Length: 224
Length: 81
Image (cartoon, rainbow over all chains, first blue to last red; front, side, top):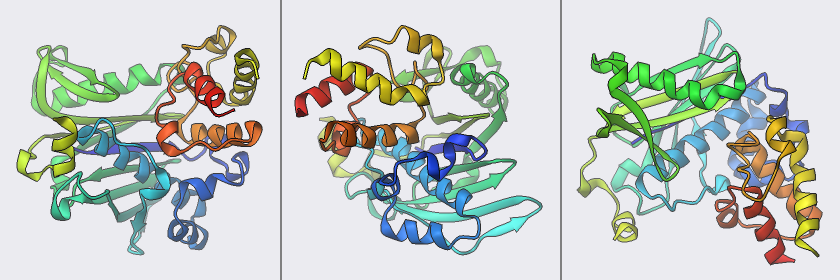
């Protein structure tokens, strides 16, 4: 399971002044608002927090289709260990999912944020999960009205390339609001997350390896 | 308040953030706010705050999560008036 989210930092709609004054209070926890205000890159930091919440929400929905997006309760903590090199800013962080969704330390999600070329992209995976097992792609789109199709095409091609199979054998399906990977028109063991905003589309996928025992009791109860 | 008036005010609040003018021109109760009107997810939170201010109501995150279409928003707001 995983989640990802991309934000086009140059989209005029990301400017804080275009939002109602109560937006920050509703979306960001006090600790996040302070961290954003302190950051030299306030704009990038703000949307890294938003993307982290979205990525965590997408991951949570893969576990519990009824999980509610309550942004101020999904609190991203990025470390001060920021790597800035050649125009790329990387942040690492964590985000605690509510009790019951994942067992033990796995509910403390790992966050990987990358800011470059006018976007910020965040991948969220369970605590202890292997980052190297995640493949993500980001691309620009000329026609933003086709972003939804484009991100699926990009993800399909990337999955096929990584599996060494023809793209025609891969398709993106849907279970509720959650995208799924179909191989030869059937369900597969891969999990995927899709995102698009402004000029960018982004996808991330991984082979599902979580066993039933690692899923929290609340989820098993809600599924039964 | 008549549902048609709620609908009119909802569409007026959404309009500045709609990316698909064609979908806006034929907006209906079943129009999906994110997928058809292409309002982005962060803006949807801001739009909900605008609904709260405009209609003098409170909308919980649990309710926001159920809002997919314009009709969902209209019905949610109408139920709180």
